[in-house]
Length: 559
Image 1 (cartoon, rainbow, N blue to C red):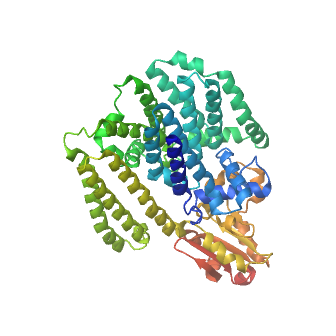
Image 2: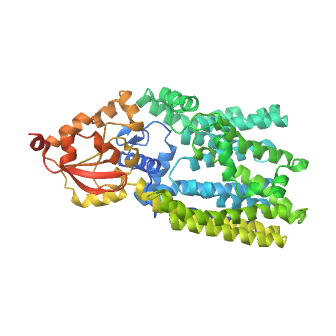
Image 3: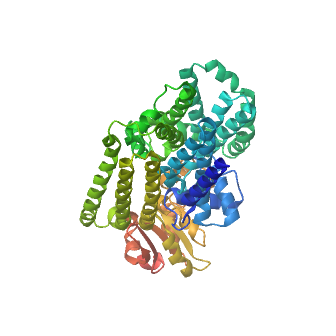
């Protein structure tokens, strides 16, 4: 009975944190606008094979993520909540999967504490509330490795867990590509080598079963998209996977140590408490040695692998967090069960004293920095950041009280509550800064002004404007296919040719009688002809974008 109470507690806590005000914030470009628009076009065209963005093939990723969003749109309509429902739902079931797996191999208390660590992790929580592929990908990769470990160590239900393993690997491939195959098998290979179980693992893999499961799940879409777009396989494998890994010509470049430093931040505050951390990294107990080794290898494999990649994004390491949360929780449970065996209370109090000091300095410096940087993110989100500093200082002070009482249990829950509370000003800060990254307010201003014959376009690099068509009641055409859409133009895609409007053709559109509305970034205005700049009427503008139309047909202006 107690296990079900803990499980339902985790269901309630994780559901609240992931779904609270999930649809309040408009879509944030480029990521959220891109994925929502692709799924919307998939529903409108009733084509579940070929992802398209502004009518142009978008073949950088497989289709699973778009299918899930499109399904949510069909059930709940074209809303921000329906779009973000997908990553939030997988965030919740990812926490529940961690609970069930940890309970299976460690026990109920470790399962409960690891779930609390995971759901209160600021990075895991925020990524789950943001419309990107990584939470869905993380769930399938992590679940695949859970299933592998159970299949390799428990004879009971080994066939079922093996099928689950291959199904999750296949779905992780359909979510993000070849990395969904590489990460699980690299982790398994390292684990088998370090534990001396290579032969045993190879026998337990059931390769024929795996081939059949993968073929059934992956092959239908791969064959269909390759039949429609013969260049897909070479583009997807060489450009979007291999080239991005080894080439320095892509965006999001970072140094080799990027992920190691970022993981230290992600694992705050747990890495600062040395006594439970020592228990987490101790392998003296034969009953838990292989379990901890598997979890640490699983948590580290992806970080090490992506550290060799030229391109780096912080969301890539998301699958590491569930494994490391379980290891950390086991260390805290061990420490709590042994009693307060610390030579000096200062050893535990030091991180909390530092956090109090840092928070007070943060609160003091914050308004000074905001005054000297008008228009900066800090100034826009100043009240939220102040609350963040107050919560950190108050949480650390409360934790210090329990350190003096030598109460490990209440210290742990205080840290959890502190990070849960801190998630709310973080969400509020994103809402305050969001107008700079969305076009919803432009669509709301334009919708009442248009008639059926009016034309609407976005000009220049569309990355900051992707969500415009999502919010508008009329079709929108992209001018120039710049940014990441330029590959469709360069590859001579026939479908892109039908959608593609060059900048020269765009200028000619103003010779007609139909009114043409244009949304573009402020930095693109200087690239427009002088006659455009002189005769435009601005409908709405903000710090980064501008929506306009011309006062008269261009032939009258230049004639």
